[in-house]
Every structure is written in structure tokens, then in C-alpha cells.
Length: 492
Image 1 (cartoon, one colour):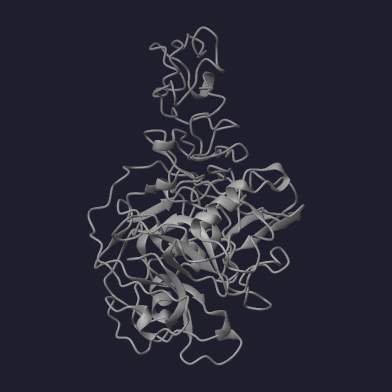
Image 2 (image 1 turned 180 degrees about the vertical axis):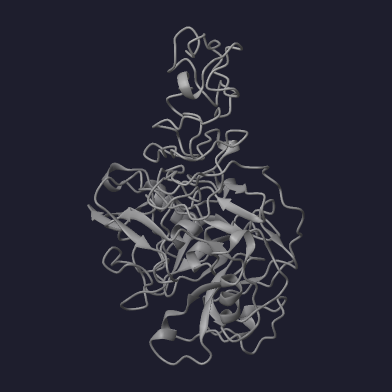
């Protein structure tokens, strides 16, 4: 397999990768400038509390749930469910009277500042409205009170984006914020998947190997109207929380291009918001890339800023072959954020790429089985995506239109199927395989994938005639004309 050598390029982003590539699938996009702008502030948030949990680790970084209930982030304010510690009760809606929040002369519920729901003022004995505490005195939606002096956590207070199975309980010692919103924690953990109810295990997030899989609902471009559209919260302190993955990102990156090793060190030494940063893996960095954007940086410009411009950006994932033989120079993964393509062919020793740091939970409680295979289908218990196991075959014989039609007409097990987005297909890639490098996927789960062929995705490119595709030789991506023949791997 012929590898791309970027040592012959200067670290200027206007040059095309193709200038040094002899591999047919390599990226060819020049960098494009992306304007910055001021970060959108989310306002003050209440503290998370010492014991507010949503999975295993404490905090609000990724308090269980999300659209699928797997790894939703703890969000306050806009999500309408403030839970930071001993917050107002969520689903139960009870504002406690009595000793901790007696009505007093003013008849207000739950302490001096905790007004009851709109169903009525508290009586002399601290009861809420005419019907007492319970369903008629909801806090949040209809109640305006903050938590009172001590705030009653409530056993079923919903945690931010919590889904059907991602309920987060209020901690006994956390104080409610002034607006009832839960604060962003520093190391929250993701909860269990809503599509899985079996045995679980706790997995540590220590390095690029342990973080090679998407362990959350795969974010998709909002313009594509697919499940799990990208959603972020500006935490107001120079960081951005991904409300689907629970990952917290450095909002604005500097203008320095670094070597791969220096990029890793830069993130480890970053003191922003108390530190705890790392260089993202290929799949982590992919999760915030919106390849459907028509121009500029392929990221949400409201939340992600550049001191200079969008360009080549390092991932912490090295090319797996580096660990198996001497590769000179050693190569690593990067994403060209001015165009959106990803590749594993950047010379680690060249100071040629930017870096954007991420903060991940120390560990996650996950399904003990990643993939479940049955009846020609592969269920990813981490992302809740269900894949066609065999795909369209190993021969590239489909234009993009034919691939779309192939998936939409697939009647496997009576389900409805579709062509995946680029980020969804990228979640299948195993960029650190223990066996053969190609095809770069779990060989037991996907035995029929072609080892060197382009698989179509539904994600559009700037040019109306192009769509994005991915090659399982290593997992690199590129856009190409829809008339080019490729393969299809369908998803639901």
C-alpha cells in the first residue's frame, strides 16, 4: 500500500495533498480561511453538586441520556431541566413545604425563594396549592421558584438532555443555581445506551486505543434532517459542551501549527477551565465536523473559533502501521477542517497542523458487548445504529444514486434502511485494529466489507455533483462525483 508523504510539502495550507500522493484515495483539498468572531455566552450556570450522577463519574459533562439516552450531556438553562445537585424536582414537580421550605405569611412554596407551581400559593402549613405537593405544583415548566434555601433534589429530576433511560437524580448536597440550571461538571460520565439493557462494564478513557470507538449517539449535520443532529452549549468559560457526546471542547484555538508530539503536549498542558485536556482521537474530532456545510470551516462557527484559520488539525490517533514496523517518517491522522476530509498520512515530525483540545470523562459505563450480530444485521450497542452486515458486496458497481436506491429499497428483516451520513459510516472504522489493517473495521462483525473500495454516504459536498465517501483500506475520506462507482453499507 503506497502511503502519502507530506514531508515534501511546506506547512502552508494552500497546497494540495495530491501534490505528494500516489494513493488514489488520499485527500486533495486546500485549506480555506474561516472567520472567527466572538463566542456566544450561555450566562452563569449553577454548580453541579458533589453527587449529581448520570452514569458512573460525577459531574455534568455527560450526565446520561441525549437524544438516544446513551450519552446525553448534562445541560442547564435551555434544556429546561435544572438538576445541579439539590435542584428543583424534575418529573415529580414537587416543591417541598414544611421544615425545609415553609410557606410563611406570603404563601410562597419551598422556602423563601421557591415559588410553587401556578396551581396555587402555599397554605399556612407549607402545602402547595389546594391539592398539596405533587403533580399540580410543577417546578421548571410552570413554576418560577429556584430551589429554596436547601432545595429538594427529587428522586426523578431529569438530567438535562436525559432520554427515556437516561434519568439523572439530583444530588443531596448540590445547591440550586439562581436560575435553576445545572452547572457544567468537569468529568461527567456517559450513561447506558437506550437501545441496550444487558450487562455493562466500566471502560477507562486513557489513550487513543481506549477511545477509538464512538461511545455515544453519532452527531449528524443539522441540515440533513437525520437522527441526532449536532447540538452544543457554550459554557461561557472558553469551552463548548457537545450535548450528544458529552465531550467538552476548547472553543478557540491559537494560530500555531505544531508537530504531532507538540500538539499532544500542548493539550496536556492547557490550563483552560482547570485543565484535564487531551488531543482528540480521529473519531472524537470527526464528531464535531459538519461536512455538509457549503463553505468555510466545516464546524459550527457559533461555537468553534479559530485564531488564524481552519486547516489541517491533528488527531491523537497514529497510523496503525507505525506500531508494526519502522515507518519513516511516522504518520498520524488529521482532518482538514477547511474542506472536511480526513486522512492518516500527515508526517508527525512536521509542524504543519493546528490542534483543538478535548476533555473526556475518565471512564464510561458501557454495554459489555460492542456489536450484536443477528439475521444479517449488526447492532452497535454504543451508538444504537443498526447496520447491514454484508453491504452491497466487494465490487464497486454503484453510482451514488444507485447506492441511495439500493438502501432505500432494502427489505432486510422487514426494516427501512438508508445510506448513512459520513460521520455515521466513520463510526464503523477501526483505526487501531488488532489484526489485519484492511478492511479497517471489526472483521467478525463485518466480514463482507471490501478492503480497498469507496463506500458512498448521504453527506453532500460543496459541489452539487459531489458526495462524500469513505474507504475501508484505512478509513480515510474524500468527496467525489456521484457518477463514480462505489459500494453501499446501509444503516437504520
